[in-house]
Length: 108
Image (cartoon, rainbow, N blue to C red):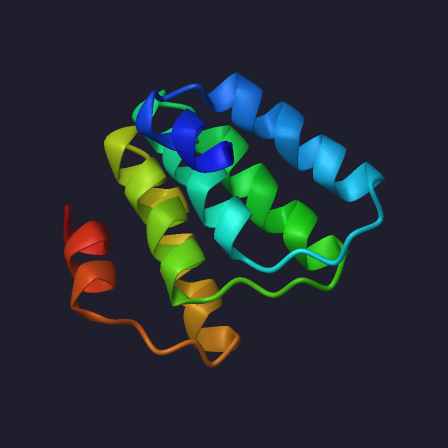
C-alpha cells in the first residue's frame, strides 16, 4: 500500500501508514520507509523525508543505501543542498557505502 502512495506522490497517506506500522508493534524493515520517503520526494516534502530517517534511527531501525538515497533525492528536489549533503555525510558516519545513484542524487 505504501508503494502505491509512492507512485501517486501521496506523501500524507504514506506517513499515516508509517504511523500505523509503528503502532502495530511490528518490526519493519527499511522497504516501507524507502517508499514513504520517495512519496515525500514526489510531493516535494523534503522535511518529512528527513523526519522519517530520524524516526527510523530513534527506533533503532538503521537506514540503508536505498533509504538514504531516497532522502538525498527528496532534498535535491526541494533545492535543499545542505540537507542532501548532511544525509550524505550521515551515510559515511554510519559506514553505508554510497552507490552511483547516491552520488548522482547528491550532485543534482
